[in-house]
Length: 254
Image 1 (spheres, helix red, strand yellow):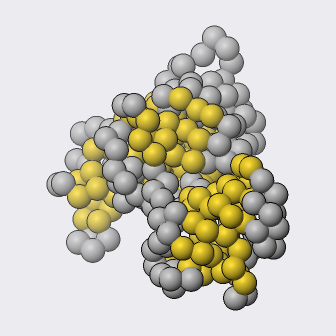
Image 2: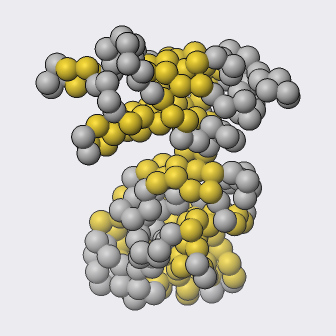
């Protein structure tokens, strides 16, 4: 991964952008650059509700198997909403690496019946005109924006519409989807969205530059970020990521 230094009052430059298959420089591509915090969040995997937990406790790392469907998955986390393990526990599981679809059935761990589940649930949840997506310990607020990658229906960049302790809401037409837990959520730097980069006539082949906006704040000295480039050339879209490092802060006056 290339390391790119970004000073918050200078041009951001891209050298020698080239189509390696055709061995030609790209001089007319449409390029935008967005900046993101270096820590990347992940969407919780499929959420599976359970009741009747009248045997041993289910814990993270367990492999669960549906007694009828034969579906299986690893347990990423467990939330107990009511009752007591060994008596009448109820709550939900977040899963990883799911194979198959759970039915209304009993779950088994190591051959022991542990709980009853309803049919496999969708992890994307419809909420009025927004879609709720579960992310634990995200620390986001409604002034934040994100880039979601790796989903079937929700890839893209979004200004958050609402947040809760373990979810975010985005504006999008609802599509039922069971997330795997491998999806990534990049958290955008404020005012660091879709900065255009241009190739001017007379510039070197494949050379593009852009100016970080004066409103961009918060590039912390020596902190790492992600620079994500969206490159569109003759209808082909390429997304590339680079690790970048801020050299110093932007002052408050810009």
